[in-house]
Image (cartoon, rainbow, N blue to C red; front, side, top):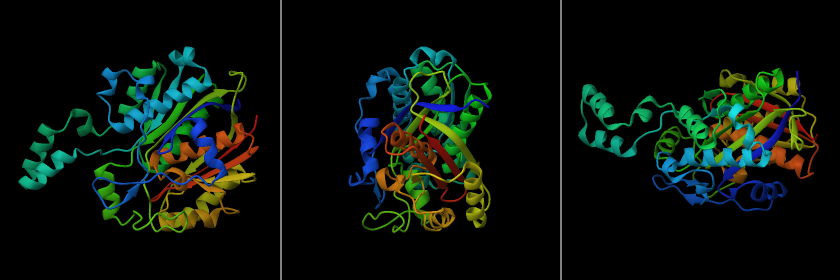
Length: 352
């Protein structure tokens, strides 16, 4: 199998965009950027103001939701940093995003009308845009990336919260390593101020309430707007790789087996590292299980820096690990994650 290199990274978070903004976060001491969600009494890490027209034509921007915009923007940063714009015609894309986006205005109208089951179905059919009715949000993100950046290779999309983001990177890396993908773009995006997410997580008691607190002290998740994309190429294809993706593994099953499964993943990827980055969500049980499985406490939590971002969390951890290596802060970095409901992942990156 050919070694897999990370050649470009694009990150968007509440702090801003790119390496210049996010690499300094590794040193600590940078306060979180917080705001109060519009539709719920919870703090979030908000979406920053971005020069979106740098990559996205305005005619395309009008058709995108905020999470698509930051995803397409982060993908553009990764492609630009890798210097592989001429290769997008043969680039493959593997992305993850959530499903079931809601139209809040239509939901409110249905609640006010209180129709019977047939009436609810009729209002949904007549009121939802086809893309929202199908709920294929990863396909929307992949399509927007392809159209905006001219990516013309194959496209694979995944849904399934945290593990979907890790699995997207794993699939892309396996294809590059096997020689079936000459260059890959992979990652995920999520915005935090989405009323349906806050409603669902809030009703499930999964969100932190009260003043912001760092992990693992908080009793729930604080959502963050994050988009993170990596470009992956085989060794020797790019003259200036940022890091080597040594191994990435994922697993999933019942919550009761989280600790054992994550330990098994750590044994497979090798857990010796100078720096440990955790993408734990902040959900108490899952976060405690992740800490119990690790050989030592993480050096940093991505959720402390820019909030928890479901599918985008693990790609964001890999992005920070790449920055740490590129900036000379560490030569070997372990990235771990336990999904707030299910799904575990572990990866090792090292200096070239």
